[in-house]
Length: 218
Image (cartoon, rainbow, N blue to C red; front, side):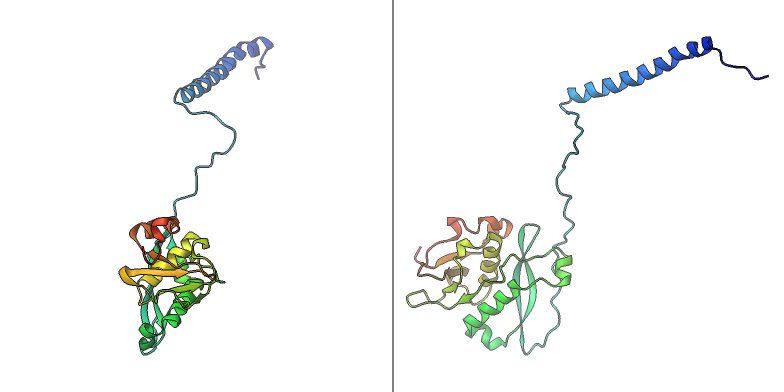
């Protein structure tokens, strides 16, 4: 015979249920107070913990094979994890012109920087900030012999782009004394001297500071 629950029985069970609910509420309240005591504020808005750590390896892939009679091994500087990192490339340029044709070398290296990094380079986290519209011209009358002129003022370039250009040129015959690179703009402004320092490679945003730009006579 089935035993029915009587109203009195239901009333007897109610206090137990109420007690359990009260206990859970009390536990939650203690947790909130404890968190508040630790300086943690409760919030219903998702908290932005910042970007996930980068998985870029920044390990430059080996340059592809090229005809040795028409290719010269070079290093160009690309951006990876907010730093300037050298990448080996094979420049298709006769070795004799590498040291004698300054303007040809400057333009060939600029082409490397303006181009989109290769698939393997992108997979390793490399990118380039050099504008596709950037051009380089020879020195003007009255400029120091090692000067190169850009179609934009160097200090108006994005800091990463300027750093890439300076460090790439600094490791070639384009550099002047003390591995400095002399760059000027399209107007009659005085060319400035830029150096590829360890600080610049680690923090390219300092490329436009006075320490990195000095007149040729400084």
